[in-house]
Length: 403
Ligand SMILES: [Zn+2]
Image (cartoon, rainbow, N blue to C red; front, side):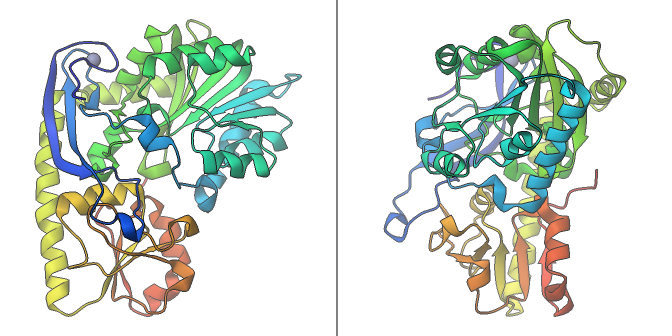
C-alpha cells in the first residue's frame, strides 16, 4: 500500500524525505516461537508540498496494529499525573458550572484519563480498539467500547459530549477524515475537543526520529493539523506545548468560529513560520542529522563493548525499535531490554530480537543503561539515583531539551 495522495489534503505532490529502510511493525514484541518470522514493511516519510504534512507512505493496516497492543498508559506515573492535570484544566476552564457533563475519550487505553474525569463528576465513555486493554478499563469501572472510533460508531451512539479527548491517537489514524468528521458530529455545540499530539517541530529539534514508526502515519505541526480540522468545520482556538513524550501540543478545538484565537496559539504559529518548520528543507536537514546520529551511536556502543562493558537497554518502548533497527543495534551490544510492563515478560524486540526482562526480576546490573524510554528522562534519573550512585551510566541517545 503505497501512498499517492496526501492523507490530509489529497494532493499528489508528495516527495520522499526520510527513508528508515525496511522495519518490522515495532509494537509487535515477539514470543520465542515468533522470533525471525516477523514481517518487515517500508518505513519512509513523505512531505506534502501543498499542505506541509509529513506522513508515512506505507500503511500497516489498523487491524494488525491496534487489535491487541500491550501499551498501558496507567503504568507510567508522570503520564497519569499529566492526565489528571488535563482533566482538571478542562473542567475549570470550560465546564465547572455545567450540569450533566460528559466526556468521550478516543483511544482511551486502560481508562487512566477517564478515571480523572469520573472523579470530577463526568459521565464518561471510552473507545479503545485493543481488546485486552478495553477489558482492563471495563473491569476497573470505566465504561469502554471495544471499537475503532469512526463515524459509524458515533452514529450508533447517537449522543453528544461536552468534552472529547484524543491523546496520542491522531497521528495513528488510517480513517483520518471519518474520525475527524465523527468528532465534529459528537461534539456539543459549545463542546471542547482536546487534541494531544507529538509536536513534529520538537521531534525535529530534539532529533527524536524514533517517534517515526508504522503506527504514526502522520506527524503534525500546528499548521498541518489546522488544515485537517478546518476541512471538517472545526478550529483550534488555544494550544500550548507540554513536556509529555518529549514535547506534545495540547490543543483546544471547537466548532468553527465559536471562540477567539488565544495569543499563545498565535505565538506558536508564528514560531513555525519563522523557523521554517513546515518547509521541505527542514526535513531534508533532519534526515542528514539522523544519519550522523547513527554513526555517533554505533561508535559509542562499539567503544563501550571494546572496554568490556555490559550494556542493557532501559525500557522496551515501541519507539525504541525504530532506533535499534535503523542503527542495527542488537544483542551484539545490548544484552537485555529492561522493562516495567509485565505484559512484555519473556518477549523479544521485533527485528533485533533483544530479550526483555522485567525490571524487578533483574538479577544483575549493567555498566551502562542505554535509555530507549528517553521521554521519561527526569522520572528515570530520580527513580534510579541509587544506581547512578553505584556507578551505572545512563546514556540517552535522544537527549531532549527541557520545556
Ligand atoms: Zn497535503
